[in-house]
Length: 170
Image 1 (cartoon, one colour):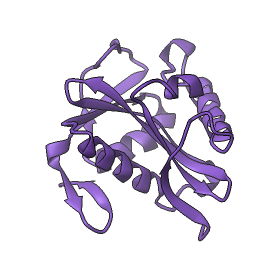
Image 2: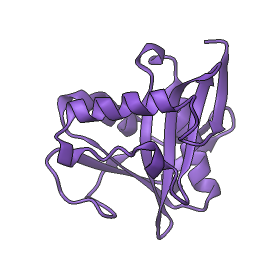
Image 3: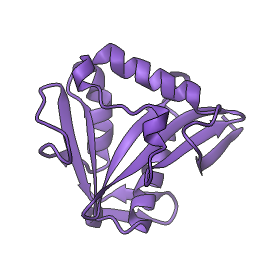
Image 4: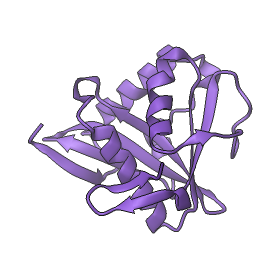
């Protein structure tokens, strides 16, 4: 793990991140009905305004996340994923802190996300809850769906920490 670089802005079409995006998409398709899969392919992650980030281990992306602007000072977290072999080393925390910092720098007042409701998504829901996200109604173009959980983090509740970026205030 010593070879890991920090969080870098990168094109989602970069060959170093494509395998991780494909792994993420395959997992989402395997754990949710097709109509409830909201993960974005590389071309959608390349749309105007979307900021895509990765943590690289040499020439391989081992973690990723994106920030999609929604308007009205809100943003959506998309495509958070850490390679299974790299989990448990704080990479998801590092990525989320980076996304929160990017949202603040962009002047956003809240972050929103959609994740799955099935048991396979329980670790993701717990992760976001630990960082101060709470359940909320569907937002943007999402519809109510028993397969989805919607969460939000008002950024005025997420305090800055000089050592590690943004973290939620208890």
